[in-house]
Length: 148
Length: 104
Image: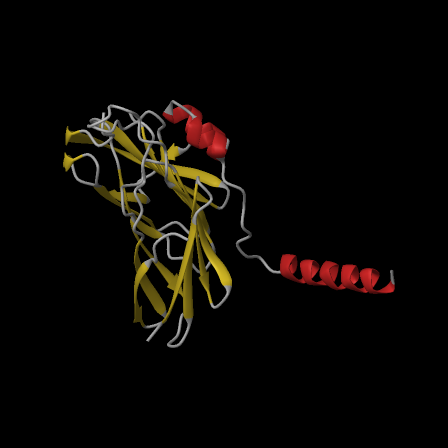
């Protein structure tokens, strides 16, 4: 019994110490957002609000994607205190493609390759200082990337 | 255990530019096997975590719309030679893979 109590106090101490400093804590995967079948629903499920269009969010993505299975996208922003960067493909069966939670040490510049089933609007959403900012681009797809 | 992650990390001043390639089928579950016409089961990376010297610096959640053999690039500030970057992924089947590299 004595040992259990000591262990408990030690772990509570460690937990308090880790929570004392602002840092990235591993969160649970937002499964519901990944199952949403509309872009608006996915964004609402993931981020809880509607983003404001902003020229401070930059998205580099081809105007025409020859191969919808591999569409390179780079999202960057000059906004500070970026908490997350997310990518949504409106016309995909489930629009939320990816979401990146950042720490203060992560440069807000992410590159990833995504699948697009057909031509679609692609959205990049940045959460910074608790606010949501986004940019969107229409991408034409020659050969769809969902294998259908 | 999933296939190892290929990491290329370059130090530019105190910023570590990291490029990672993760061999993985990233099956959406919507594709049909052309020979059997059966749906290929969904098998895709659901979560990626990045640590810098043991400290969590990024956590990504992915869906099946991330391309096969995912490539991702990102940068970490406050890095120095000898620092360790560790990347770990887990998928919807419970498979995982973890690779680390030291910055030169």
